[in-house]
Length: 297
Image (cartoon, rainbow, N blue to C red; front, side, top):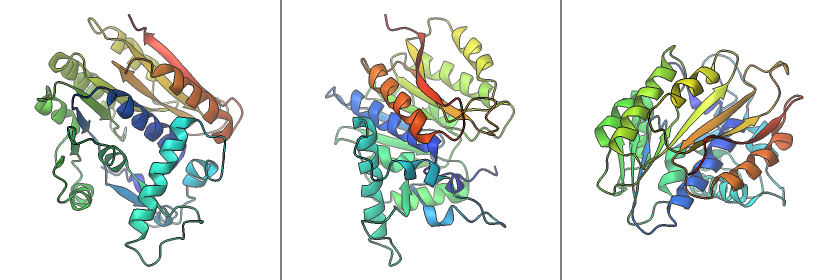
């Protein structure tokens, strides 16, 4: 696998994905009963944004200034984005305190949290997390990051296999994040297989699937195959386009499919995506919002 998220950390896709993730987790935690957070493609716990400009052999243009960077210093953030930015800054301060080269609190963040840290840092005593990563070096970094955390388990394994292996959990409640690198031609098929297996094992589980919007992604085919599921639960997509298909962007947007969403979560996420569109736009045609595939009953 060639994908390394450190080169994209804090970009517009991370802003959407991580703010949605935190909103879903907090919405599910309005119920007292514990839950399992399962991250199928966890990556590592956090990323050094100063390394984002360095590729494996050539310098790269960092992506975070056009994502996270555009939120810094704003006083008009929607509540979901304000909570997300606070979590990012908390991670940056905590990680920076261990590093003599860390930026001061008044400067742009140097360290950015991955989804494992964001979710794990918001677990209650009755919640737990399983973080899956099959790439050995990423899994090693993840294991080091969460060493000694009693409610967090790191598994070096294929995330799609983990859905079948860990569901249903004893808690009978789960938030499953499926965030693959989309490097293989059969990625959509793997996602559909995992969703079918996961829903069979935990029909009421909440599943969130991140996906890119590109010419090659063919998300429309994925939707049709998903809607062919028997008794598909309520689900919506929350999408952010930073430009239209003719804006000349290789990646013009992204989205998250949310199956069995927490009640009432669609409206604030629709507001969030619509707010982000003009702020993070990189070309004409930027837009965002929530679209129901199967409405709440």
